[in-house]
Image 1 (cartoon, rainbow, N blue to C red):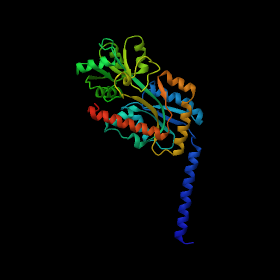
Image 2: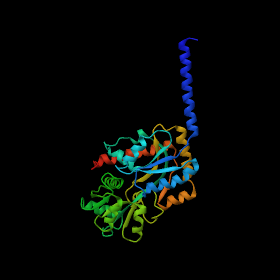
Image 3: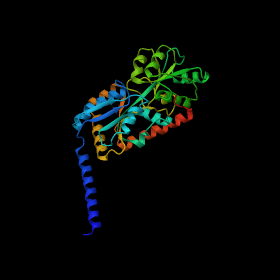
Image 4: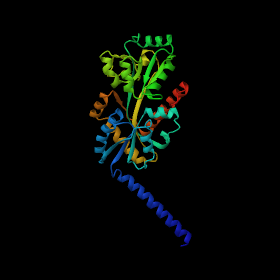
Length: 326
């Protein structure tokens, strides 16, 4: 046997051993705890979702699930940490439509790209919002509110959870679809904006349904329409914005899980299968329904397409409204 042939055979043997090691590693997964990074603060909706899911996922996988809250930087801190983690199936990250908004804003300081540096694993749920106004606003319904805003350009105002936030862009989309122009009053959080709305210091707000519903029911806020394609089970008497006159208005916040790009396909598929099964459980559906969220069941590819569509949608809104981060 020639030296060249011996070297070739040795190389093939080494390559085969590496392939065997990789297969064994995937087959043995998970062999240790799995971390879910939540790039939002503890106690928020996304954190609650992660912990509810983790309770069931650790039983399904036979390994502890550790929820790691890393808020800050428009959720860039936690998301970047996930993107830079080893692609071994032991790091996941919670993402929402807000990630698509930030991508749409083209924030230069981001050190990751959502669809390049992370891979979709599973969608969990979607949640719609609601347009509410202070009772002092002389508009009993959406039609009257649009007419009022058109008659008084740049005189009505609305709050949001910050410049470039999801609540801000929902309002900008509403303005573009109705031909209205209002004054934007940004706050640090949606809760702070709601407080000022209740006090009458701002006149309108695109809010979450769980946050606004109690005040709608006691008459402290007036609901003009919900943002999704169907009426909310929590607010069955409130029409959707689309049926109330803004045809085609459809904004839902998607929540799901991603993993570092390059995570082995069998691991992604196993996670997707287990998560979809968990989300079909009656007790899980009941828990999600309490916060007015609709369960989603998607393949990784379907979830990826949904995220890409969100990025495209909000990029267009940002461009047409000339929105930049402050």
